[in-house]
Length: 64
Image 1 (cartoon, rainbow, N blue to C red):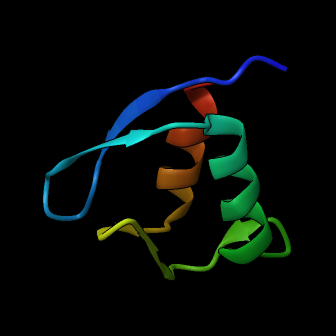
Image 2: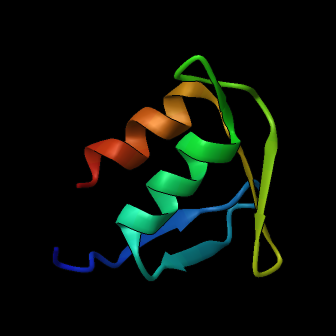
C-alpha cells in the first residue's frame, strides 16, 4: 500500500503534515470512535491538536 502524505489544519489553524494517512485514519477509528462514529475527543499528535468530530473523520477519509 502506498504511503499518502497530506496537510491538514489543527484546531489552532496550524498546518500539520500527516506522514501516513492510512495509519492516521486507522488510529482515529481505533481510538476516537464509538460504534464507528466519532466520539468528539481530542487527538494530539506531535504538539498539534485535532477535535475528532464526524465531519473531521469524513474529511480525512475523503483525502484517500
